[in-house]
Image: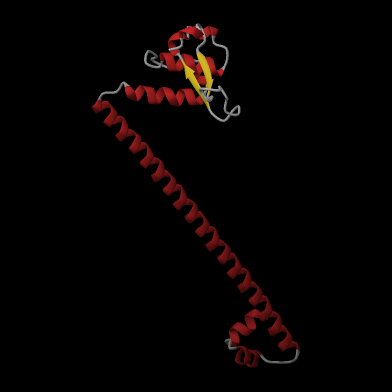
Length: 177
């Protein structure tokens, strides 16, 4: 593309006014060209992330798997999966799409199940809390009733009078004291 830039894989150009060569302020507009045919480094000679991407993009069609060194970059793994779909036949692509949808559906089902389980656990906890509060209230009422019966007996009230006044049977009045 730019033979005069021999050996230069990445070229950066800025925009300038043609007649007077007035450049736009630096950083406003820049064109970046990558000439993959000029990139000849082997895997063991790569020097950083840019080289790794250039290597991958230049050889994605030939790779059967992501080389271990490139696999450390999650985005390259993702790009490799996308590149693999380009090689698929229409039937294979359809099968992949169905499988992808099935996986998404399974994830949604799992999320719904986990949500339902969480709601069930919360409802059970609320029920147990309510039962504990009810039990505590009943125990408190029972202690209050016993105290009241004992106080009435100390004042000389009979079991029958206490039962009539509190709406209990005489047996209950005797048992609770």
